[in-house]
Structures are given as structure tokens and as C-alpha cells.
Length: 412
Image (cartoon, rainbow, N blue to C red; front, side, top):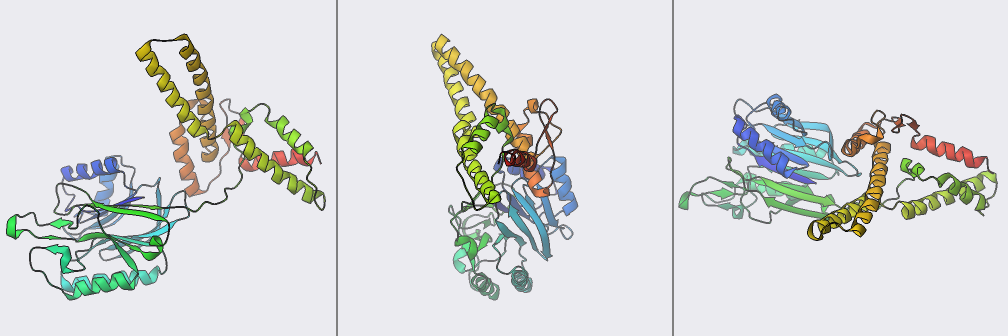
């Protein structure tokens, strides 16, 4: 997961808007926190929609021509809900799609005056009381430094807000993530003795995240058009392996001898339980184990196999370019083309079964659509039926399993 934070210093002109969209397309962050937009959230949504951008957003309006805070996210990677909004603080509960990880994401845009800074820090403490114990990531322009060492030039000394900021980090058990390619994120753009630079932008994360098997790295990004440099944090929480539920894959039925093989396994099983039902359960468990082994031997990882075949095809064609077309290589290319076509059909069926889309046909080769639809399905938790390229209905997982259970139950 990549999170980027940037004080953009206003999105009032088309040049800045285009620049932001270009960065989203180029860097593809999972989440982007933008401060000092100087526009309304409605205007921000218009910018994203006008540029046909895939990102979704939540935000706080600017006050006049000042302020404004937005959190944008890629809905194919992150799901957000349960929003909480305090002045200059925006918080949502995020879930990383495809995992069980739930993380509270908070974007901040700290105030400039001393009294407002104290209220700002108190609000962060109050927010933690609302979401106690959960994994927490806070990012943005805090307009605060922890020590005089985070500032270069200008007046350097301690103040009450600086001490309160350190207390907040310590009391809330937050870790200040250091950037690996520099320290200062803000510069007054002046030269010589008049130059002032500070570390105003940062990411703070809760100790619970650091206790996991996790990779974290933060960097300062070069940028034009603002006196703040964006900061990017890459965070990868390693997932513990878990037992995947057994699923009957629809592409298995492309193997003509599957039903005969299943009947053979069932009849030759020597499983014996306390009664008929227990024996039935033991045989089903054995069948599941044999199906998994058969799938690995017969199909393997169809996505990796397809990639391997495509690489081999490129190698053969490169040889044809350098050495001329040879009869032996032509025959191998034909074999690989047939294998590739079969793998592609299997991949389409695999994604269709996962996406449960009923109206697209097998020959359309919209694999990316099926993958996207699968992700959206997991969020909506809806169930659809599936049809093959001839319009015939392919059974759902539950129905397929029911058919085979009934079939082998009759063999008892």
C-alpha cells in the first residue's frame, strides 16, 4: 500500500489540477492526502470526474480561499467507511481489499497560530478515544516540529506546541516515520541566510503496525508549484498464511475425464467411519484432497503457466527474426499457441466464476473486466449465475458441490 501526502497550495487553476491528475496516474498511490486545496469538495469531485479519474474521495471544504483537506483512494485497493471529521482532521476506517487488515487513516492540515495548534492536538487525542486500540496511520502537514533539530534557519527554540506534539506521539504510542532521502519537507524558497526549512509534513503510525511483519519506507518526492514537497510512504503488512476454503473451479469441467476420475476415486476409497454419514464425510474429505492434488498436477498455476508460455513464444519468434524461420521452431510455435489458447480460456472461466458476471460471453476475452468485477463483488457480496460461450448456464460453486454430493451419495 502506498500513501502520499502533499500540501498542494491551491487547486484553483487548471495547470495545478492537471499536475495533480498526472501524479495520480504516474505514481498510482493507494491513498493520497491533499492539504490546502483552497476549493470545495464539490469542485474537487468535478476535477476528478472531468479527468475520468478512478479515485474516490472525501473532503473538507476550504474556508474562503484558504484551507481545504481531501483524502482520495483507489477503490480497487482500498475500501473506506465510517468517516469522522474534526476541524482540520479527516478520518476514515479503511480496509485493504483482499486482506483482513483494517486501518484507521487520518489526514491532517495543522493550523498556524499557537492557540489553534493546542486545540488541534487535543482533537487528535479525542479522536483516539473514539477509535481506541485500532491500527492508526496519521499523515499530512502538521505545521508542527518535534524539536529545533527539525528546523534550519530562522528563529529556533522550543514552544508549548512543540512539547505537546511530542507528548501526543508518546502518549498515543505512535511511531514517527523518518524519510530516507532528507529531513525538511517545507522551504521558504529563499537563498542564503534568509532560507528557512522545516519538517512540517510526516506520517505517524501506531505501534500495533510496527509489531507485525511489516516493511515501511518513506521518501520525499520532488515537485514544482508548492513550497511543500510531497511525502510518500510505502507500507506492506505481511499476511499470515491461512487455510483457503475449498472451491470447485469451473474450468475443471473442461477436462473430459474428470467425472470418470471422480467416480473411480469414490469407488476405490477405503474410508470407513462410525456410520454411513461419517463414512460419507470422510470420503468427501478424501475427494477434496485428491482434487487439489489433481488440479496441481493437471493445471498447476494457470496464470504463471500462461506467462511462461508467452515468454517461450517471444523467444522462438526472436530466433525466427535472427536466424530465419525453421521448421522445428514453427511446429513448437503451433504447440505453444494451442496451449496458450487453452490457458486463456481457463483464465477467463476462472475470473468469470470469481466475478459471477452472467452477461459476458467466454469469447470476449475481457479478463481485466472479470478481475475488476470480482473485486467489486467482494465488496457488494452479491451472487450471480454464470453462462458459457453457448449461453448455457454454468453452475455456481454451491450448486456444483451439491450436484457432486448428491451424485456420490447415491453410490454409497
